[in-house]
Length: 306
Image: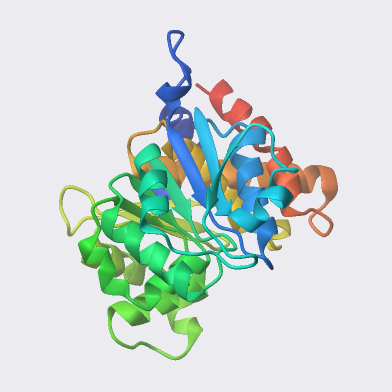
């Protein structure tokens, strides 16, 4: 498996140089959809990773319930805000509203702090069945998907799933109508189980852990693409780290065509940025926002390797 470990020179080849004759549309129109009254911080971190630290997308949007707009708008400057219909404290599913959003973007990431209300379910299910771009499902969107896993068979879009091990267990158990009760079984067999899941649904899977695994189906369905990313630090085991990763994936997907390559590169950038944060803040005291502050440093170091 040594050859499957992603190296910095690999990432340098994946992340392209800027084209001299280009504009913001060249680097993708992307959006992050999430946020609930008790979880608004999650979407803020993703927005910071995507826009303030220049993960690379040309035009980025944060789609949030209308009632959160006054809160979130104070924390982001470079990102457009797209209000999703809501009551005073809960998101609402409006088909025309969601259609308008998905028509505007090439990449859509859903789930960070979204909650699991009835409307949240309707929104995620509708997007899976009707969106035709690149769709990243994280956090609450993964748990919603696990309740109706076979929707993946109806998807028109290219789907990237970003679970931690417990979220993956829910997805896998749903896919195969039951599973082992002990999470240790999934830890011990994670690579084989990830391959099996990816082959069933033809998605890109990023499985978070001390060593992150990215798996995608290649030209031969029996030979999935696999990369291991061993960058990072125990200091990243803190609230919001997954949200930062989602922001980086979204940004890179905006201008990197291949979703497997972009997902691998994002995991590498995230891990390296976390290492830089631990260097400056210490593993005990660092937070997810410290990782955000070092994304640009990580990308600059990677690009200097070319």
